[in-house]
Image 1 (cartoon, protein in one colour):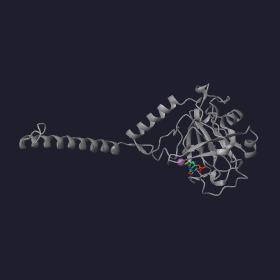
Image 2: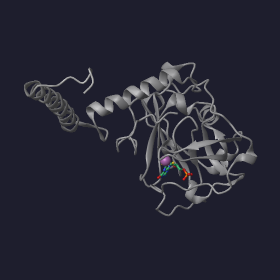
Image 3: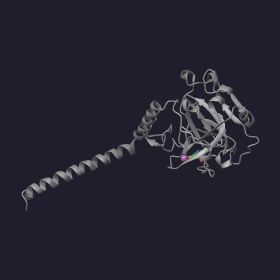
Image 4: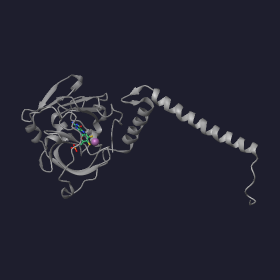
Length: 264
Ligand SMILES: Nc1nc2c(c(=O)[nH]1)N[C@H]1C(S)=C(S)[C@@H](COP(=O)(O)O)O[C@H]1N2
Ligand SMILES: [Mo]
């Protein structure tokens, strides 16, 4: 036996055992207590209240650090994949006649519920823009994809929606903007809430083309949202109804425990 290896007396051994098991036990009780606290807390939007406040804190950090000047990286068209993945068909399973489809918009102008019905021809008549970017899904895949349509900001300026007064909406006048836009599929099977600042972001588009061709049905024809500053979940396919409010609109995945803003 070397000098360093001192003998431990049985009493000392017992004391050490008692201490370490005690610490381990307390640690366990602590974890169990925290778990009980999280489980027992009331549910807020599909997550227990303590977890939901962590998710909301995340949203706030994102909002502070990601201004609308922050542009998502774009790629040359040649890098866009030809076989675009189809993910999620909630709200797409009911038959839809794209020829008679119209976009329903609840403008909420001056707080009154006025409704617009806008055809695909009217939407196609607006300035067209294209974007190639890395589309990211929270399930852990991403794809460089190519989309075409009208900037939401151009649409909103043309139809004067998104502001409370009915003036052209702009991020320069936040007091006159509704806080949220809601989008719902025609059958109500999928729905998202988008903060207005992100909706008016220059890369957010109401999309009707993919790879230079009309949007396929399973990708959300006739019109979907493409919002590169957010995860796939917010890129609602097959828009039926659009609305504006200061309250957070119902959101399919936020109700199932995901972060509300889903910002990137
Ligand atoms: N109507 C509708 N839109 C939806 C979904 C859905 O299930 N239904 N899934 C979302 C998710 S999770 C992702 S990742 C993208 C996928 O778009 P893609 O199918 O065009 O790849 O659509 C989003 N929009
Ligand atoms: Mo997704």
